[in-house]
Amino acid sequence: MIQFKPFKAIRPTKSDDVNIALERINYFNIIKDNRLNNNSNELQNFSKADVLKIKEKFSNLLKDRILTKDSASYYIYEQEFSSNTKVLGIIGCVSLDDYDKGFIKKHEDTFKEREEEFTQYLKDFTLQPDPVLLTFRENQRIELIISMVTVKAPTLEFLGNDGKSHRLWQVKDRLVMKQLKSAVESLSALYIADGHHRMESSAHYTQFRRENEPDFFGGEIFNYTLAVIIPGNYLHIYDYNRLVKDLNGYTTDEFLEKISKVFTVLEKKEPYYPSAKHHISMYLDGKFYALYINREYRGIPKGLGELDTFLWEKHIMKPILNIDNSDKTSKIDFIKGTGDLHGIIKLKEKVDSGEYKAGFGFYPISIDDLILVSDENKTMPPKSTYIYPKFLSALTTLDLND
Image (cartoon, rainbow, N blue to C red; front, side, top):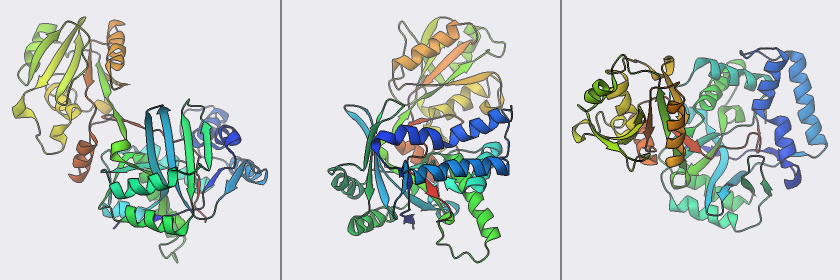
């Protein structure tokens, strides 16, 4: 069973001050400034003096009422990209025990260095400003509760420095809180859409606190992590495309012959954006090609076989390009897609620059396939998805000492 807990958010007090407040307490800015002070791009632990200085700045923001600390609440969050593109989600805390038990499921591997960086930050500051982005299949009960809350005036409403409109509703009515808690906890599972490193680092931090506080009972807030939970039908998943620096010694004709054993290859006269799953765009030697994965190669194995990034690795990257791991090679680079032809044009420009030999564009992975891979306890190839929204750091910060 999922556990979903309200929390005492530290947040900007007024809409007019939001961007100022977020800039001052943004986790990534703090990390960047610390690295600049140390003249290094490598992981550097904060000195005690640095920690005290940053905590003092944070305390002053509370004293000056630029930040405020709420009573225990949930929050509804809305991010608006354009007049007809919005995402809505619920902010609260989820249990790290649920993550360990598999009720909160992942689809990516994590890197030890990034885990250590964020874990050290949590140890130093005991503040969590960046939520994990979780998702679930469409749920009418949850969406009804969200709609009941969002008909009212938001607690905060502002245009962010990211150019998007942001709205935040504090949910402190006991009845509505009870309804939200019940609805989320009735879900069979939650799925990590973005924030695998934050989730894993939070689990490490919880273990650290438990080892140093042996009398813990499990209800302390350090047993939880901050999360924004967004229904799958609101989530925006974009393509993540590949650039290849060489063809492993093959000529263009030889390469086309090799891939035609698994793919139906059709030359296109115009830039080609994949029209559906199992269609891949390829740009090579000034020409666009549509690569259609032949049916007998689709869906194998279950879950991963639904992902074109996996099938590309299995049938092109490994056997033909002779690359075992796309994360540990200098021969492949990744470029974020746009969900349309604009991303394919960027791919073309990169290849035309001469730095790369070929580019491959993918149709975005669906929420259903993300969930299927997670349910199968499988791991997607690196950079298979680029997911929106990107949550603003420190909009609602969790104090891990509450």
